[in-house]
Image (tube, rainbow, N blue to C red):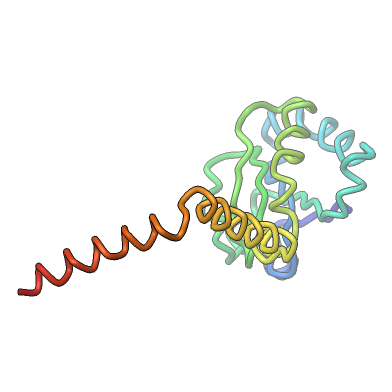
Length: 166
């Protein structure tokens, strides 16, 4: 879904970005690079891979940057700028490889995990995976070092601690 942000709608941009992660394109109608990027951006939004993402795409006029209060506005150096905003308007990734369809699509697909709510930080499945990884690592260590060796190491440590205290 594409939303156009006109120069007077900086507050609207802030309200959208604070709700969920977005892909934002900042442009100026007077910039030749931005004019060249416009048909590429429209064809990108019509691709099935982009429609399946269920992500909001923002088309932001460069004059609206003055009215934007989110932190992502500080990272805009020039136009056109394509960035992924998340977690209350912070910018995570800025596209700077090229203005062709393939590079922009690759940028969005490579950073797809950031387009989940809160930038993918509170994803329960990934937390579960990390917990199971930790548990399996612990069990591997136990198999590698039997209890006798672990106890010997603990005794050595304890004797070193006791000798340091005296």
